Image (cartoon, rainbow, N blue to C red):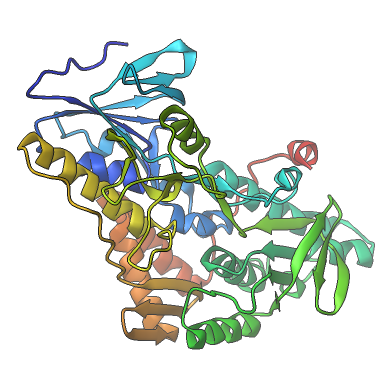
Length: 436
């Protein structure tokens, strides 16, 4: 592997991570006098906000992912490298890769994202998958569809009810969207697929330790989302937390005491923890790492005492205007990636760094067909209008035109027919039993 040769006029910028932050940083540097190397362990950019639609059969993975090389193929100053980063030698200014390789840098941007957090109960991960990768989404899709298939085969009504019980942990946007999509899958898309069971009889529980779903939204929008979920048959249990998960049931504890729900399928949407690369950066630089695994950065997004190393997105602890860490959402990562690119370009011309200022354009969550909530500045929308806003914004945020056409076509078909054509079981039962 021969890295680009940096010169005083064209320094080498290495970007770790092809997610929202890393990709937008790379794209924003397309005209800068630098040599950019974008490193990611996969060869594609994934639009994570729509992963729940892959998990419930509405979209295929290729609809929401695009090859990184194709995205930046016209950027002559950008090279894509598929590799796993295993460490950093900041004194020697090298990124350590798998198979013993190392890559030099003049400026390093790390945007490695986050993984699921099980709040100290990591053994739950194999029983309650989260939703961060394509593999997560296809596994969840297989788990959901296999539950219906097994319910069709059994003659035991108790076992059938257990198989048709789904528990989603976490009442944030991911949990709410997953619960709504799962309800529509069971009530409509699978309605005529089985002969011995009625998929619409599935029990879908949404468990959250807070006092309301979508706790970061205005209370009126949370109440609207709750009503929309309940109209779709979702059983929302606020103020309760999961205390145990086994292959056959889940135990929850709340004000009324402890209850065990027999279930085949538990889905996790309750928390995230920064990529292990954040801890590695902290150890290599002496920067503080918080309880969520995020490395602390300066207002200009570089590590303290290391102006040549930036950390952005879900793995960075960056204070907002209110002094609290900015949320781990796509708009934050995108804006940070663009800001870092401007900083790098400005340094080439001797301009000083400027602090990052996040512009919050609002929050949205969809509950299902023609139902969503949106909070855009002082304006709040619900129902069909919010759903249209959600559709448009998510469609335009997809990176490639091809993805936009594919998703728009699939959404139109789903809306007219209520069908979810990507209902594929891609993990055979033996593999799933091994996971469990």
